[in-house]
Length: 286
Image 1 (cartoon, rainbow, N blue to C red):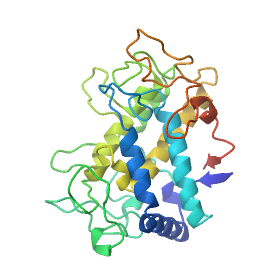
Image 2: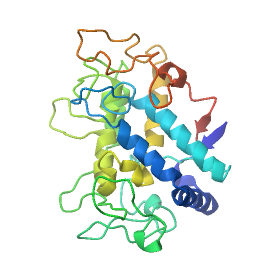
Image 3: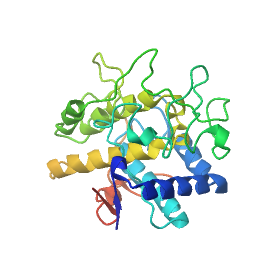
Image 4: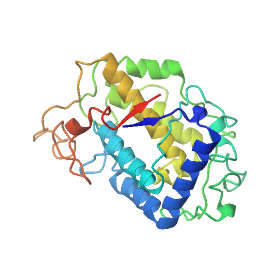
């Protein structure tokens, strides 16, 4: 079992080893395989296909396995490396430590949003964008969206999501008006706020973090490690409220064949949500 740390508590050596492992995965082509996987399984709920990764109850277990697979790839490069998490309720500005030149680099420049600082800047020659939904070859960001400002979610907003008594609710998609999963994933359920929690963070970072190929930005992994930690906190607070739906949804429900119940194997690994409810044999958070 290994430990995932808050990124603000990483030592300079830990940051350097993580960056070096990320760059090696990029050089080998393995990193882009992970980007393509996320792109392939980002299926909107308006699409008449099974959806395992987003707008669905399996959002948390799917990303837990995805993150574990990525972490294992990093550890094949350097066994000491783990994925840290970014608590964006505390580190809320473009001046926060994760955006420093020795770690993830900063925001994009005005005009084309190209990241010009840090090890993932295109000018450093190590981070060419190959799997994308735009034509650019470079990493882009627009931290805080200064010309149309957006704020990161607050601790109070996270607390409201953690207070949800049930894991998820019908119709098991982006329109669910209750349930922890959609409260954290952050699709609009009718109120004035279009993007909440997880989704708003993607939009606060901007650039390539918006869209199906968001893992092109290494901050994706730190963001989703925090999502995983929030799921753990909810589980601990509500030990009797398990994953929903428990049983496979059957016709004529329009979600039949599109949503993964507790024991439905999820692609691309054929692993069931029930196998991913307990993180503790793999890692812990500090």
